[in-house]
Image 1 (cartoon, helix red, strand yellow):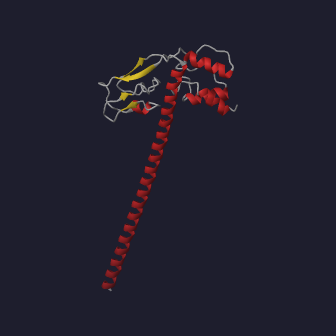
Image 2: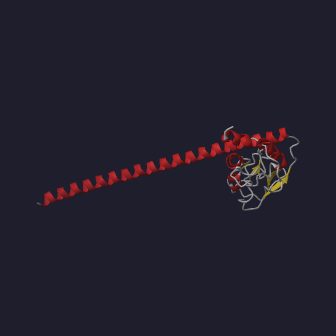
Image 3: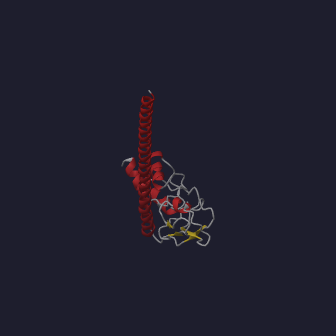
Length: 208
Protein backbone atom coordinates (compact mmCIF):
# COMPACT_ATOMS: atom_id res chain seq x y z
CA UNK A 1 0.00 0.00 0.00
CA UNK A 2 1.40 3.40 -0.98
CA UNK A 3 1.62 6.24 1.52
CA UNK A 4 -1.05 8.12 -0.46
CA UNK A 5 -3.47 5.18 -0.31
CA UNK A 6 -2.74 4.72 3.38
CA UNK A 7 -3.42 8.41 4.04
CA UNK A 8 -6.76 8.11 2.25
CA UNK A 9 -7.71 5.05 4.34
CA UNK A 10 -6.76 6.92 7.52
CA UNK A 11 -8.68 10.00 6.43
CA UNK A 12 -11.74 7.82 5.85
CA UNK A 13 -11.70 6.94 9.56
CA UNK A 14 -11.48 10.52 10.81
CA UNK A 15 -14.57 12.59 11.77
CA UNK A 16 -13.99 15.31 9.14
CA UNK A 17 -14.52 18.15 11.60
CA UNK A 18 -11.47 19.97 10.09
CA UNK A 19 -11.01 21.51 13.54
CA UNK A 20 -7.21 21.41 13.69
CA UNK A 21 -7.18 20.19 17.30
CA UNK A 22 -4.72 17.51 16.21
CA UNK A 23 -2.20 20.24 15.41
CA UNK A 24 -2.61 19.86 11.66
CA UNK A 25 -4.61 21.86 9.12
CA UNK A 26 -7.48 19.41 8.85
CA UNK A 27 -8.28 15.72 8.70
CA UNK A 28 -6.37 14.88 5.52
CA UNK A 29 -3.20 16.70 6.62
CA UNK A 30 -3.37 14.73 9.88
CA UNK A 31 -3.92 11.48 7.97
CA UNK A 32 -0.96 12.29 5.73
CA UNK A 33 1.22 13.01 8.76
CA UNK A 34 0.28 9.63 10.25
CA UNK A 35 0.98 7.81 6.99
CA UNK A 36 4.19 9.58 6.05
CA UNK A 37 5.72 10.78 9.31
CA UNK A 38 4.45 8.26 11.88
CA UNK A 39 2.43 10.95 13.68
CA UNK A 40 0.67 9.71 16.81
CA UNK A 41 -2.83 8.31 16.31
CA UNK A 42 -4.24 9.69 19.58
CA UNK A 43 -4.55 13.37 18.61
CA UNK A 44 -8.22 13.53 17.51
CA UNK A 45 -10.52 14.63 20.36
CA UNK A 46 -13.67 14.74 18.16
CA UNK A 47 -13.03 11.17 17.05
CA UNK A 48 -12.52 9.99 20.60
CA UNK A 49 -12.05 6.34 21.46
CA UNK A 50 -14.06 5.22 18.41
CA UNK A 51 -11.61 6.68 15.88
CA UNK A 52 -8.57 5.84 18.00
CA UNK A 53 -9.53 2.16 18.06
CA UNK A 54 -10.11 2.06 14.30
CA UNK A 55 -6.78 3.77 13.57
CA UNK A 56 -4.97 1.33 15.85
CA UNK A 57 -6.62 -1.63 14.08
CA UNK A 58 -5.81 -0.28 10.61
CA UNK A 59 -2.18 0.42 11.45
CA UNK A 60 -1.79 -2.68 13.64
CA UNK A 61 -0.78 -0.59 16.63
CA UNK A 62 -1.64 -0.95 20.28
CA UNK A 63 -4.31 1.58 21.35
CA UNK A 64 -2.90 4.39 23.46
CA UNK A 65 -4.73 6.96 25.61
CA UNK A 66 -6.04 10.06 23.90
CA UNK A 67 -3.68 13.00 24.32
CA UNK A 68 -6.60 15.34 25.08
CA UNK A 69 -10.07 14.48 26.43
CA UNK A 70 -12.57 13.33 23.83
CA UNK A 71 -14.88 16.06 22.53
CA UNK A 72 -18.60 15.33 22.87
CA UNK A 73 -20.83 15.72 19.84
CA UNK A 74 -21.75 19.39 19.58
CA UNK A 75 -22.94 22.12 17.24
CA UNK A 76 -22.58 25.88 17.20
CA UNK A 77 -25.59 28.09 17.87
CA UNK A 78 -25.68 31.83 17.17
CA UNK A 79 -27.50 34.11 19.59
CA UNK A 80 -29.25 35.81 16.73
CA UNK A 81 -30.42 38.88 18.65
CA UNK A 82 -26.77 39.77 19.34
CA UNK A 83 -25.43 39.03 15.83
CA UNK A 84 -24.30 42.10 13.89
CA UNK A 85 -23.82 40.32 10.56
CA UNK A 86 -20.05 40.82 10.36
CA UNK A 87 -19.52 37.66 8.22
CA UNK A 88 -16.45 36.61 10.23
CA UNK A 89 -17.98 33.34 11.39
CA UNK A 90 -19.14 32.55 7.85
CA UNK A 91 -15.60 33.04 6.56
CA UNK A 92 -14.18 30.82 9.31
CA UNK A 93 -16.55 27.87 8.82
CA UNK A 94 -14.78 25.08 6.87
CA UNK A 95 -18.01 23.38 5.80
CA UNK A 96 -20.17 26.41 4.94
CA UNK A 97 -22.62 25.57 7.74
CA UNK A 98 -23.36 29.23 8.54
CA UNK A 99 -25.61 31.34 6.34
CA UNK A 100 -26.35 35.05 6.33
CA UNK A 101 -25.42 38.31 4.63
CA UNK A 102 -23.45 41.41 5.56
CA UNK A 103 -25.14 43.38 8.36
CA UNK A 104 -27.90 40.78 8.54
CA UNK A 105 -28.47 38.05 11.11
CA UNK A 106 -26.53 34.81 10.62
CA UNK A 107 -27.68 31.32 11.56
CA UNK A 108 -26.13 27.85 11.74
CA UNK A 109 -27.34 24.92 9.64
CA UNK A 110 -27.38 22.45 12.52
CA UNK A 111 -27.30 19.29 10.40
CA UNK A 112 -24.18 20.54 8.60
CA UNK A 113 -22.25 21.88 11.60
CA UNK A 114 -19.34 19.70 12.75
CA UNK A 115 -18.82 21.53 16.05
CA UNK A 116 -15.26 22.42 15.05
CA UNK A 117 -15.36 25.67 17.14
CA UNK A 118 -13.50 27.65 14.44
CA UNK A 119 -16.33 30.20 14.23
CA UNK A 120 -16.03 31.20 17.88
CA UNK A 121 -12.65 33.06 18.09
CA UNK A 122 -13.37 35.54 15.25
CA UNK A 123 -16.84 36.53 16.55
CA UNK A 124 -16.53 40.10 17.92
CA UNK A 125 -19.82 39.84 19.80
CA UNK A 126 -19.17 36.51 21.58
CA UNK A 127 -22.63 35.46 20.43
CA UNK A 128 -21.79 31.90 19.40
CA UNK A 129 -22.07 29.03 21.83
CA UNK A 130 -21.63 25.28 21.59
CA UNK A 131 -24.56 23.01 22.38
CA UNK A 132 -24.23 19.29 23.06
CA UNK A 133 -26.18 16.97 20.77
CA UNK A 134 -26.86 13.25 20.88
CA UNK A 135 -23.82 11.08 20.25
CA UNK A 136 -24.00 8.88 17.13
CA UNK A 137 -25.52 5.58 18.21
CA UNK A 138 -23.35 3.50 15.88
CA UNK A 139 -20.53 3.68 13.36
CA UNK A 140 -22.92 4.05 10.41
CA UNK A 141 -24.46 7.19 11.87
CA UNK A 142 -21.04 8.55 12.85
CA UNK A 143 -19.56 8.09 9.37
CA UNK A 144 -22.66 9.29 7.55
CA UNK A 145 -22.22 12.61 9.31
CA UNK A 146 -18.48 12.52 8.57
CA UNK A 147 -19.13 11.91 4.87
CA UNK A 148 -21.57 14.83 4.73
CA UNK A 149 -18.91 17.03 6.34
CA UNK A 150 -16.28 15.78 3.86
CA UNK A 151 -18.49 16.67 0.90
CA UNK A 152 -19.28 20.12 2.27
CA UNK A 153 -15.58 20.72 3.02
CA UNK A 154 -14.68 19.73 -0.55
CA UNK A 155 -17.32 22.06 -2.01
CA UNK A 156 -16.12 24.81 0.34
CA UNK A 157 -12.55 24.49 -0.99
CA UNK A 158 -13.75 24.39 -4.61
CA UNK A 159 -15.71 27.59 -4.00
CA UNK A 160 -12.69 29.29 -2.42
CA UNK A 161 -10.53 28.38 -5.42
CA UNK A 162 -13.23 29.66 -7.76
CA UNK A 163 -13.52 32.92 -5.78
CA UNK A 164 -9.73 33.33 -5.83
CA UNK A 165 -9.63 32.67 -9.57
CA UNK A 166 -12.43 35.20 -10.16
CA UNK A 167 -10.64 37.79 -8.01
CA UNK A 168 -7.44 37.21 -9.99
CA UNK A 169 -9.29 37.62 -13.28
CA UNK A 170 -10.93 40.82 -12.04
CA UNK A 171 -7.52 42.12 -10.99
CA UNK A 172 -6.06 41.30 -14.42
CA UNK A 173 -8.97 43.03 -16.13
CA UNK A 174 -8.49 46.09 -13.92
CA UNK A 175 -4.78 46.18 -14.76
CA UNK A 176 -5.52 45.88 -18.48
CA UNK A 177 -8.17 48.62 -18.26
CA UNK A 178 -5.68 50.83 -16.43
CA UNK A 179 -3.05 50.18 -19.11
CA UNK A 180 -5.54 51.00 -21.87
CA UNK A 181 -6.53 54.20 -20.07
CA UNK A 182 -2.89 55.17 -19.61
CA UNK A 183 -2.17 54.45 -23.28
CA UNK A 184 -5.13 56.55 -24.34
CA UNK A 185 -3.93 59.37 -22.11
CA UNK A 186 -0.46 59.12 -23.66
CA UNK A 187 -1.90 59.15 -27.18
CA UNK A 188 -4.09 62.16 -26.35
CA UNK A 189 -1.13 63.98 -24.81
CA UNK A 190 1.01 63.23 -27.89
CA UNK A 191 -1.73 64.54 -30.20
CA UNK A 192 -2.07 67.72 -28.16
CA UNK A 193 1.68 68.20 -28.27
CA UNK A 194 1.73 67.64 -32.06
CA UNK A 195 -1.09 70.17 -32.57
CA UNK A 196 0.62 72.69 -30.30
CA UNK A 197 3.87 72.32 -32.25
CA UNK A 198 2.02 72.74 -35.57
CA UNK A 199 0.32 75.93 -34.31
CA UNK A 200 3.64 77.25 -33.05
CA UNK A 201 5.28 76.62 -36.47
CA UNK A 202 2.36 78.33 -38.26
CA UNK A 203 2.64 81.38 -36.00
CA UNK A 204 6.39 81.47 -36.57
CA UNK A 205 5.93 81.54 -40.35
CA UNK A 206 3.40 84.35 -40.09
CA UNK A 207 5.84 86.35 -38.03
CA UNK A 208 8.48 86.00 -40.71
